[in-house]
Length: 65
Image (cartoon, rainbow, N blue to C red; front, side, top):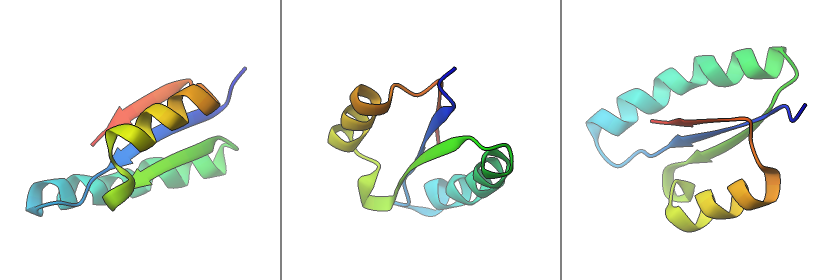
């Protein structure tokens, strides 16, 4: 089974910054469980990076913040 998750964490304004902070708990839990986390944060939370990671790693789960 593919143990990879992808998380997008933009940080453009107060709302996305707030949501981005909550993702830390998800990332920490995934690390403890041995799940690889593809963390697209700040400037990397864009369409090009997202599509590239999807094609390359085929994550089991995708979380948008």
